[in-house]
Amino acid sequence: MSFSFNAGDLAWISPFLILAVTGMLLVLAEAFFKGKDHTTLTGLAVAGSLAAAIAAIIIYRQLAPGELHPIFSDAKSGAMLVADRFGCVLTVLFALTTAVTALISPAHQREHGWQIGEFFGILLLSASGMVILAQAANLITIFLGIETMSIGVYVMCAMRRTSRRSNEAAMKYFIIGAFATGFLMYGLALLYGASGTLSILNMQAALVHSANPGLVIAGTFLLIVAFGFKIAAVPFHMWAPDAYEGAPTPVTAFMAAAVKSAAIAAMIRLFGMALGGDILPFGTLGWASPLIVVAGITITIGNISAVRQDNIKRMLAYSSISHAGVLLVGLCAMGLGSSSAQSSLVYYLISYSVATMGAFAIVSYIGSKGRERLLIDDWAGLATQHPGAALAMTICLLSFGGIPPTGGFFAKFFLFKSAMDVWNGQLLWIVVLGVVNSAISIYYYLRVVTAMYFREPTQPFTVTRSPGLLFVIALVPLLILELGIMPGWWMNLLS
Image (cartoon, rainbow, N blue to C red):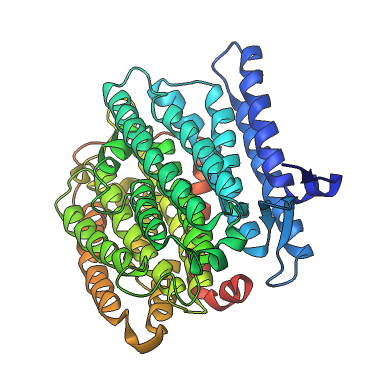
């Protein structure tokens, strides 16, 4: 296999290179920091993430709408990666999410005794795998991106070594992740066998005329299972509540926002491009039929389960499961021909990621070593002692529930509208189900708001402070409101 390579290809993948090189340097730098003050490592991690985001923005401005620039091309297998505006926007999202995670981590590390400098290097290396998924144009790069991302997250889940709950969460996540990898690898192999090509860009035409339609169907169903585990869709969600609860809170934020977004990015590449078109998603054996059923079950089970939760991290975990179902609705709409589905999906990922990072930052803020305050009852009276944190959490929760004028409202509006645009109203039922479940979700989000504003505190709140954490808590509500006040600007950017 001979690849055509030129130095210009390195410029197109500069965000990945920045994250990967900075991550490796941070892992090595830990050897030179004998103390427990990781301020320098935090600064380097944030600087590397911001540099990757800036590089992605520069690349975005060099690309015309709809332009695909192949990277590392091969005559037989096609391009390994591709530079386009879709990938650039998601790269910026992943880089900024990584920067926010690095900002909120030191305070939690110091308070809960897991000050491990290698965390920041592994964080950036995991983010580099997400960038691979955002630019993937080959089945091999899809696999490499997912494994690079996942292995780092497995390690970060277990970094709170003295916590049995954290170790249990990491083990569950690792075992389920390894199980999902088997489905992924087998599904990709069957698609390669049916199409004879590894290129995502060329696979659609090859699969339509495949002499082995059985392999196409089997491979597609295996991929639905594999990605169902990755995004915690029902019935592949059993690991998520335990992993979210047991992992250190900043790692939970990274898992809920960045990992889910990266998995959806890979699904857009695979299902929207390689398995898209006018034939493959349709019919009783097309992938849109089983996936939309999974979406409906995921939205419903996630919401019903969240209603019963008293632990706020488990409640947010089931909420995340429900949001995964909504994202699958957008993916099905994209496969069934909706022209606005892809931009709606990306807008939803941005809005959801911002609110998720903010919510978990506040969970980290009010959780001290002596009392982590993970039960909803523990949030009673927060507004009387820390009104800024209570207001920020309220805005995040309202965005999750889709209440205007937050970004979450327009995220659901645009995504459900794209589903309504599908020919012959095929997805009308799932839109109705999604709206009903959005109304249900308001109940368990308002439980937290009610506790913060309408109940008396049982004891003073001992908070975990750091400049980075306070900056994130102050910035996130403004971004959520900006997404809700100027949705048209964002949709024009993403279209």
